[in-house]
Length: 269
Ligand SMILES: Cc1cc2nc3c(=O)[nH]c(=O)nc-3n(C[C@H](O)[C@H](O)[C@H](O)COP(=O)(O)OP(=O)(O)OC[C@H]3O[C@@H](n4cnc5c(N)ncnc54)[C@H](O)[C@@H]3O)c2cc1C
Image (tube, rainbow, N blue to C red; front, side, top):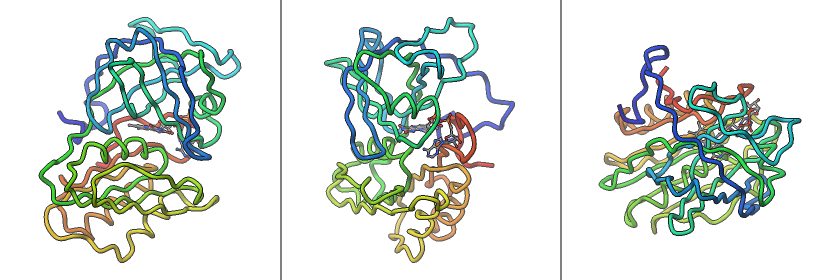
């Protein structure tokens, strides 16, 4: 089964757990007011392998109130700690064995709270990655949409696209000061859409699609954002673009009011 397909709840076989690695913060960089890059290192990363763009890893964060410097490595049969969250490997450098993860500072939550205070030397536990997204190198065009949680994945896709792919990126952010230069194919049109505090997640993406001039031909769409908005976006995109549904990958990255949204939400329900 590829990552684009989703088995119904209850029938999905339990996936083998990745080997837990204890990794340490080696650098912290503020990319924008609400996005922070943490670079991790450590000898455990010798076994890390890059599995392509928009892959995901698991990180176990310290439990609130238990000290933020380190976490215990769970045994193979231990239940997954409640502070385990899903993140995108933004970049892995096998030469230095360093792993970058970009954290949206969205407010309270074990992961975002930890990222806000992250300091060199602190330790977390990491597992994975799972298989990433297979970029269609033959597609004449890509339209990519997402919010801050999906932005690291979107950046890995942009970096994997061939130089000639005509690409449009619609990014929803809370405020205009989140905009920053992104790498991508030569013909990449990046549109930063400001949602504004208090507006519903996904509302700026939906607005951005109003009157959108869909290119002709069999392109591809990748959309990643808040899970409820995602479903409406997917329906809108399928109707307006005329694309077969296999050409539109929709992935829920978080859900309003939900802790630790599942990593396998492809908006198929
Ligand atoms: C495959 C995949 C890859 C992901 N990659 C990244 C990544 O690289 N970078 C990244 O920042 N996030 C990423 N996410 C999203 C991240 O897993 C969630 O945002 C997660 O809930 C954060 O955990 P937390 O402990 O901070 O908050 P939680 O304890 O899970 O949630 C606490 C509260 O915060 C709200 N919340 C959670 N996320 C957001 C958000 N982004 N904006 C506003 N409110 C939110 C929840 O609705 C809840 O009410 C990814 C998710 C998936 C499924």
